[in-house]
Length: 68
Image 1: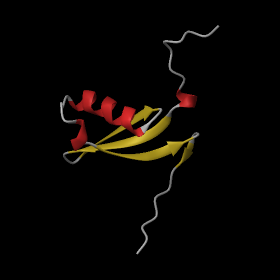
Image 2: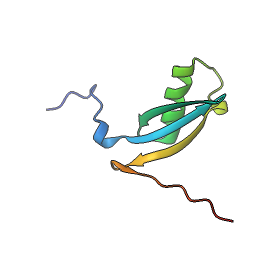
Image 3: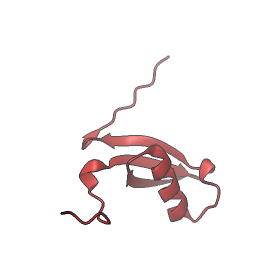
Image 4: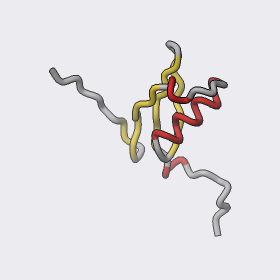
């Protein structure tokens, strides 16, 4: 039986959080959870000011492509 308090990073996705020109990498199950973790890291009460984008899914990088 595994300890339920231990988070396995294999199950988590990587996200980049941006806040006031700063960048923070966080691992979470969802983008909302990543945003909340970043808000705690930056010590802000306004989590909606933090932009979160996926950076890694299933241990593979996520590639963003700009389209006209």
